[in-house]
Image 1: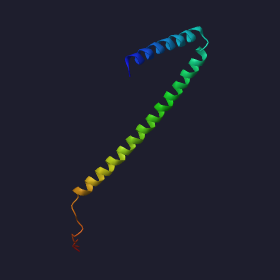
Image 2: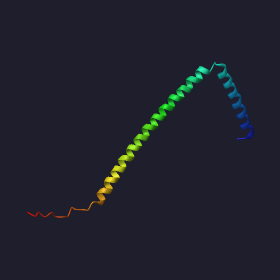
Image 3: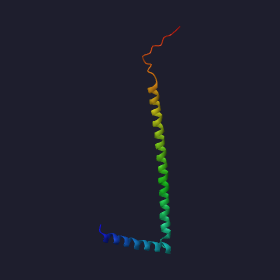
Image 4: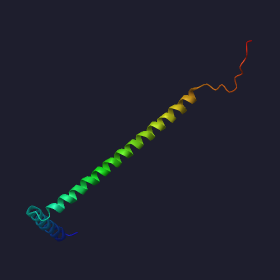
Length: 90
């Protein structure tokens, strides 16, 4: 990109920003702007709830995996008694 294009982008952005700010201050766009922002908060809340749900699912998976690991570790430490014969002393 050339410096000229960047300059025109900055100028256009400044003009559009000033135009938008003046419309909002006059009040003609204020109701629409607040409505759009309120939907943004709805989306944010939905995303936070989904993130919490995913976090809980991951914590559950981690707990189950740790339990399986502990069970497997415990079974490895037990001595193998499959070939031991039991003698009755009666």
